[in-house]
Image 1 (cartoon, helix red, strand yellow):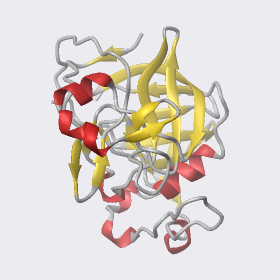
Image 2 (tube, rainbow, N blue to C red):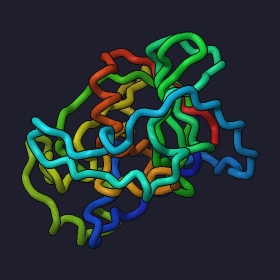
Image 3 (cartoon, rainbow, N blue to C red):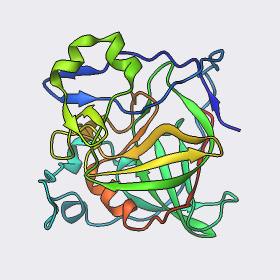
Image 4 (tube, rainbow, N blue to C red):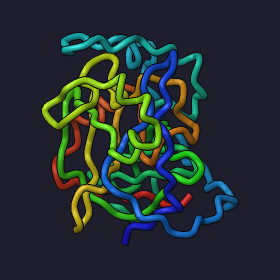
Length: 235
């Protein structure tokens, strides 16, 4: 069953880096879980791609995907193939907020590992979900509670098919792709998505969503089917 730390719907930050934040729906607060647990051991790297090629701008996209300088990101958070000796089925996704990694299980014992940004203090959660919806260059509509907390946000929004928000594109906080997490009760309001701020991977920065470098979410998105199981480990 899904477990969430006390979830205070904080205001969406609007600044030089653009909109930040994601999620929708009402969140019920429960007591905060201690974040003082030790980090899990790092997995052993088996192979790394050519990062100059991996993180360059992507051709053929509807909107520009800017080049990311891999030299400005901790190598731990760059895409790589690693040993993964945990009991998850191939094709599944495991998010480890404690190490800021997302694993896509390739075969028993091997996974592709990506660096991620995760929920900041008060916004962490853990549990099981499935990807029941995927969107290419998705629109983003902030939850009502977020707009109520910071009415100035409303002035930055525009009409989208789902209400006031930000149309899909280069200025959208969900980036190039979004995969929507559901449980038996429906949409959890959490997404695995791209970001305007690639250098925030490896940090606690989001409102509970899992953010990835745009080049990485594009790579993962193409390999993930609807119904893919997702496990978010306790921090």
